[in-house]
Image: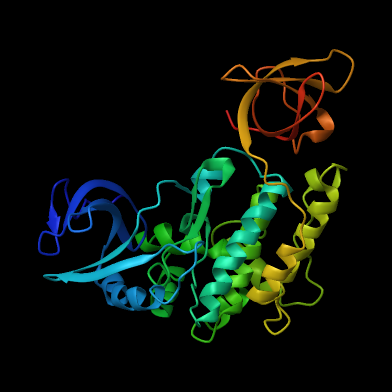
Length: 365
């Protein structure tokens, strides 16, 4: 159940410096608004804690996140206290989170695009780790993308805000009906490393790497590596057992020779992120190096509709809304085969008599 809005449109904050433009949304710990900075004349994201527990860490979050300066990390612009309320001001990211922007539109992402996402996120996490900043709550909701599948920007948000204090986490584990559990803990669990459950206070930077691996597995498979909700905890903890079964390689990678080399490499990097031995887990810098060695195209993505399929052979045509026409072979499709009328996302490369679409992924209805 959503909280009532703390602010309304046209409210002023911070000695009338920030004017509320619109309500963007909320998470378990905060509400987010678009506001106008009347001094610098620019739009910003204004974040407000929803309860006293969140209030305590807003100042810390401002100090922590302000230490990180990297294009793949949302910039902290200001921190202020107005009466009994604290505010964190960040750059406004005009996009969607990873769930809404990608997984809400496709069942999974092809390895080419996933490699690009992985590379950018690894660089953002490495920048935070260089200054000793531990995010603690990396998950799709805290990753923002601009430009949709073209991925013009990707930024990590909410350092220090969304993390659950150990007492809070213990509380929600003991009460599955707690509203905090539904809004924060349950959403965080699928991406949490084993050490976060065993001793959250002692967990450190390697837990962020595990979370990256779990997110990337979900991106290429469409499935969380150990499932969702409380049932995932036992499966994550089981990974401490040396004989534990690792998340299997997605079948759409195994079955597609076009993407298999890159898909295999991605899968192995993901497993190195989700090594239950903290000391053996890949570091952020090592992860960046591994991602730099991946060969992935950065051709723009387009949207279109499958308008024809050959009655005997595995090829067809895609038309874009702007009238472009492209050839595609079913070997270039990642995942389920499209049918005539399917909406698809694809990159295009020169060909005769039509440019060729590769790779192709089917959009959700």
